[in-house]
Image (cartoon, rainbow, N blue to C red; front, side, top):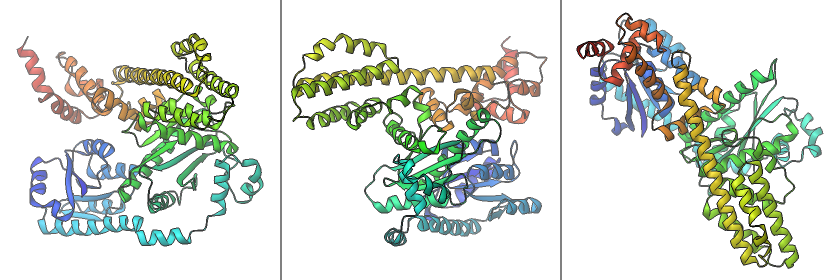
Length: 531
């Protein structure tokens, strides 16, 4: 079923449209409705419906302005415009905005049904083109790796020195100032054709983008974004990060819409040297490990979860097995820790007792370093206090038991630290709302910039921790303060609207009634009656 958002300021019109059409018969369902463009935009950003049906003439934000805003976020979104006979100029503007579906009021049932059929054929065709198994198999069988892609994969593997001359020859972006790498991981990775379907969408999505290069590194679609600083790196870098994360969010939506394949996208922090793309790819892979803690997140930006102290852990002189154990402890759960320890020591059974003890203390030293760098003093002190008892562990079984106990404690400390960090930024966000609600420019982008968090991570975490979406929390705060101001009889309604961050007094009244159940005027009367 394709989801539809119905937008019209007249309740009766919405009811008639909903009741006239047997939507599900034609493959559609009305998933939500809105009374105006502003309300619709909030729903679109949260739910991303497949189709939007919108009236043109509406208060606060009209239909054409809504479409302009939609085109900024989802350029390919299917939009149907509803309009009266006297709005031909509006219709012309709609066509200029790339709207190919236009319905005149009063709405005719047969016209809508015919339109739904056409739209379904078109949407089905788009999905079919992205997932046609026969074509994908043929493409897979005949695909010869491009030289540029091979070189990128060599770089992700840390072999920049060996291929630097070829990198220049094949026009790889080695002279840029900032790079971010993202990796797409399919959750149920059993079908190679699924991998190819995702890769096909990734390649098409970035085909015309001159600031990104795609490849398939270790069977995963990989995208590196790059940027050349024009004037001020400190000002331009945050914007580059934000724009990149927006592209990745849109990419995820496209992948899911066309394929219904569940995937996650890990995103690295910015790096500043093309030769260090192997570090960026490791960060992107590590970001994917945080899916355990944030199951509602599909785009996972490592910068949201780890500060700079984590970076040093990936560059320490420890072997791959110990490094893998570090990753599991910092991102895994009890079962994965136990399995990792068992796996680690099943390979060491043939070691001499002195070699085994040396290897054991190497792991303990690494754990103490982690605790110190992450400022988990309690865990560090516990390990040091028990070092004597640890030295008595002279069999694989004893070492295994001691390590599991120690690593579980460290994992729990990290979880608590991460939880406290999340609570801390929620409190910061709530304080920022209280401090900035008066500004009409204060919104999701502004608060994420102040907190140095991605919009997606902030939005999902804020709602998870508070039970309320950020936009709603901001509006409720504005209305809360408006209620106090309404006690002042000298203030006009439009003045109060401006004082609490609304630029449109009519939209203020709409939001006030939606939250309180009565208009500002009636609320003021109720205050006077209670005096």
